Picture 1 (tube, protein in one colour):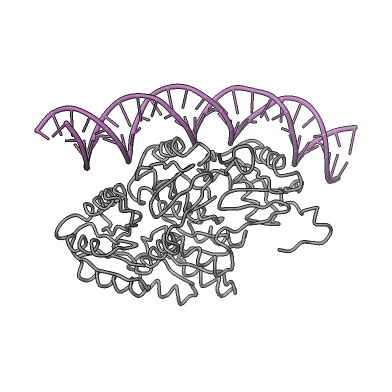
Picture 2 (cartoon, rainbow over the protein chains, first blue to last red):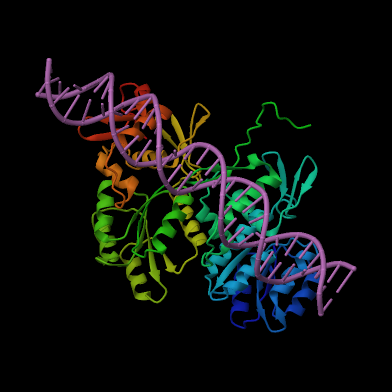
Length: 229
Length: 229
DNA sequence: ACAAAGCTGACAGCGGGCTGAACGCAATCG
DNA sequence: CGATTGCGTTCAGCCCGCTGTCAGCTTTGT
């Protein structure tokens, strides 16, 4: 797996680079946004580790630009513990995960292999969930050939379900996944987004377990009348 | 997998408990050493998450006592970042691993599944109780391929039985488990819910011991021989 | 046979969950 | 630079199924 590390800290940067290399991945290290853009222009990466505070600009802008350019390369954001707003902005801008500094290098390895497991291996792992076909790498969902567009938050929520197939997910768990542990959300956001996902993907995709949480739907059309045209 | 969490922090405790439960494990939460001893006396666990600073003593003493009693249950110690000496002492006393607070819940999950893997269990183990097959992670019960849906309270009660296989559970114990000290219920709620469980799962699943309490049924279909897991 | 313990059907209240609409905000467009 | 669009979040109100309770019945032990 090819990894691009964007980090200006002279201590943390080499440490992370060496760890990623020790895990058996190819890694390039950029300490400025401009360098990062140049690396991206010259090569392609399977994962970007992105610090948000950089000497020549905000990492957030780079992330946003990549996403707007249609680049779905997974991005893990590196933030300090107190930069909560940055972290949220990162998730809004389309980051896939985050790591809070100071983080354990073992944890970094864990996230790396998680990404490698999800995106690596086959060039185009198509996943089937019910009557939907999804491409995690491209962040694309299709039904009967017609593609369905999700917003960043919607995808984040749906992704949480996909990563735990058949598992019952409590609202607390989902909130935690969407809002990075500390930022308090005092409303029914999860309910609203579940509703929107159902509207887009079909009501059967997510099933409610009253008082306990949600779960990926049990594909009721398994063999009975509803077949594929 | 059955997990005992010993942690007195009123924020971290429930958070960890929910995460462990979300990972599909049964979990009991003790906030004091004395409570932990009681839990251990009443049930058996596959893993203990142990905070070292507790209001009524040091977790280290509990760990040392268990090891001296010949109990090899894996223990993961939870420590604050600066308590290095405690951590070392914990490892010396027989801890299997440690987690530095504040830790990411994702990392907790990783350690949990590592322990589960070491134990030889799949990440999503299917449990068999009599003629029922249950998936703790999905909170799903099936018999002959047909799934049986339980409400939140029904599952809580059934879970109490599953956690203590073959153990006789008094109504007081069950009430305590379902209603967590605060709201006192002055009626035959337990009887009612046992009835509802029997209606859904089959009358033989829970057997009555008059004057004492209830117990998981002895699988009459298995014949005379005492089936062993 | 009697009393105590346990079981069950019915039911009212409530709280969890769903939805439409509105607001703030940032990005984009004219 | 103002207008517009689209996303994320909040809120109020409705709905419905779970939940606790009780009365009356059945079972069990002595």
